[in-house]
Image 1 (cartoon, one colour):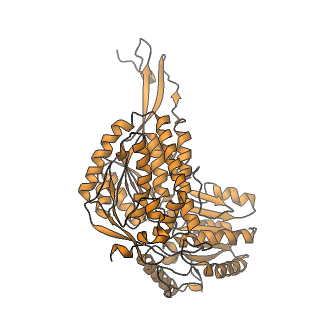
Image 2 (cartoon, helix red, strand yellow; image 1 turned 120 degrees about the horizontal axis):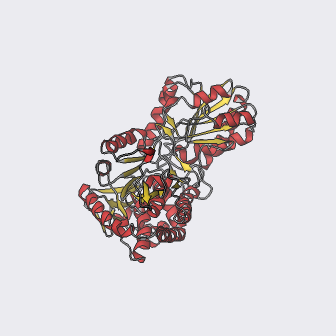
Image 3 (cartoon, one colour; image 1 turned 180 degrees about the horizontal axis):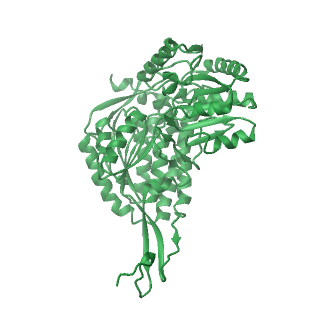
Length: 517
């Protein structure tokens, strides 16, 4: 295809060039300068199948050049006081605010999520910048009483150095933002490898960030970028120069990353899959359940790691909730379309592989005795990668297809006799990311939140499983990886801790009363 056929050259998408600095051909590596020596790939719009623009990826040698420059930049960046690092992050937040709409549109174009979600994703990066600015003046470090006279124990937190960030296609800006803002105030430099299918989001975001760094006479390599394939990701995971790898993606690939990083005694921050459930007891407000379930199940076309995959209904409300949910889906289906258009609530899946996985999963569910009560079809009457949001009943909670995650809008509706059974079903899957219970029973709420309740990292009550706020730590247990990003004390993962004992006296007493004389 000639560049004349690229969407970046179409007047409707003029913002790509005018606001974001993208071209029909873009270099996908940045370490203070833009370059690339790898394979040329095309970024495709999931809504139409058309090419947005081309990107030259980086290769392993380009990656090495990024690490060299990022490590050099660390010598400068680590000496900047944390509050002043926070000021740089504040400026990045301001720059992102100025590009909120165009960058959000790009997210919608390249990933496929609807425009309010695309803009909301950029807003999430802005919000974590605001959060990080305050945090840069509040790093906690304990002063611990010493058992020895004239001694003090201190905890000191210092940056790790240069870290690696590998993000996924479904949140091509926000996940980097979570890691970037916190890691920057902690004093690290970073190498970012975005998803191979969303390189334009990575490039546009890095252009915004690098302009702030350069304006402040700081090395652009503080926030280095490499667009690349699995060979680059493997090089990062195996590189002892990167003490931390933050990886967001599938459980399968996350396991490979974890083994590689652990083999060199590095640190992992893993954000992997989630087979999330909503539990509904007999006291639940039905209208609230249905409204929350529609977004949690079908929002982002089922492509959030926090998407609800299982709806576990008390026998007494099963028929009512199912009927209401089918009716809501019927009203949702006509609002499927181009994610950039106003009023659209359902965008496409990200690529053909996702469509194939959707179709294969529907086939498997039916073979196991499942009944498709809504949806189940690939939309072949239109361009792009569209599928119908789907509701399936009639399967046991232990069915293989229910126990595994398919990254598509497929919901399994299950029946239970009480909330103890529902909680056991919730906890029966490998992953442990997000969960929610709808109930008006105070006792059930606190059991759900307690040691015998949900085993997930996110445990909600009377809201859906999607849409976490930045103030809380985000992440999950078991095969979700155990990592935590965003709020609370997640910043600690980007730093190393030292316990420091200071003797300000003239004697040398030993701990535990030991005498050595």
